[in-house]
Length: 131
Image (cartoon, rainbow, N blue to C red; front, side, top):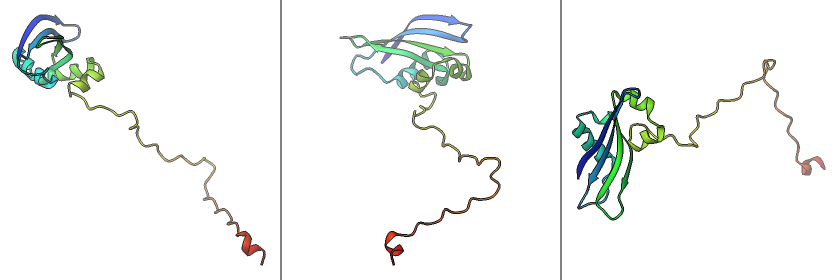
C-alpha cells in the first residue's frame, strides 16, 4: 500500500490541515480506514489520534482509492469540530446506540402523600362466598 498526497491546504480557522490523497493497493482489496490513518500519520509526521479520514472511495476498475483527510492541531479540536459519525468511523469515539437511553428514575410521590397507602382489600373468590 502506497499513499500519495495530492493536495495540502492549511485551515487555521478550523485548526487543521486538509489533505487529498490517493492510496495504491495493487495486490489487495481496499485497505481498512485504520491502516490508511496509520500510514498517513507517518507520512505527515502527526500522531494518529489527530488524523481523521473524512472519506475514502475506491476508483472502479483500478487499484486506487482516493480520499480526504484532516490533521488537527490537537485531539480535543478533532473531537470538537469533526462530525460524530466520522469520529465513530475513525474509532475516535464510541457509537451510541439509539435504544440505549439512560434508565428512567422511579416516579416521585406527590407532595401531600406523607403516609404510606393502605393495601387494597382482597376480593374473595365467588365459590367461597356461596357457602
